[in-house]
Image (cartoon, rainbow, N blue to C red; front, side, top):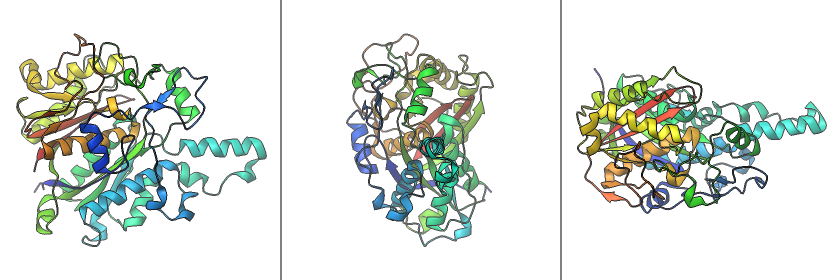
Length: 410
């Protein structure tokens, strides 16, 4: 028998706040988390803006001696997981063998890779840290969280580029739904704002080269010309619904659907026909019993690249139909958080869940010039109140990966 799945805990380290309450307030108020890069000297780079995490204190979540053993992406993940587990109240109330961790990273410890490679070139291999390999590999956030919370059950790090944490949450949902676990810590983390990753994205023509933070990440706007790199870690605790009810847990929302497809089209560009991205949305809709656009919010992938936003508009229209798509409320919170890469899907799932709880559609900020090819209602500049019943979060990743998560008001 298929089981229902609840969201019972949330945690967030983001460019707009280092806890859920702060980040959600910033999102609903339309605060921009984008500013000039401070993590390295970007003076000679064509792009100079990023959405960095600010004032992060890892010592709130990890002992000082652990910091040199963990890349920043793992630190972000552990911090967000600690918040989410505490919020859920599940620790000590679950069989460890029925407790899992699905936390992904699109890139993993790339800053550690840079640091240790420099040591090799400067002084030979003996200078390489003994913690280099575990710090670098992209499964270590999952492993570290599992150790911290004694989660001995299904444990799986997923890597699907920008769809990473959406797939992580979706696969966790399926594992609980079909009885492989009773609760899973799920989400994603990324800490890749460094010269190597930044330069790579510039050279593949992906980043916005705007100098004004308010003109940089502008999804669905006709002026859009690339995304802004972001970072952070975001975690949801998913739990079998009846179990959560029985223990008196707070339920933010019910997760009701998950679509996972691939364009099989191009290594970086989405298929402009949007056939498979639309199918991912339809799968999540069908599982959830969504038949039209009334009472539905879609947190779009909305990167602010010319092709992505146009393609996503097509996907939403194909999934909901032309008439249904006109009724859907859409926004891209990447206009505020930048593109958090492997953490983006989890951030946007968190926004979808809180939108349901509070009846608020967050805005797409700095929207000025409508694009006829992106002609849906994208909630320009200011949040709106709406008693929505369902919220979808869609992600499109390099490699053609498409993921859509569906949540229902609790």
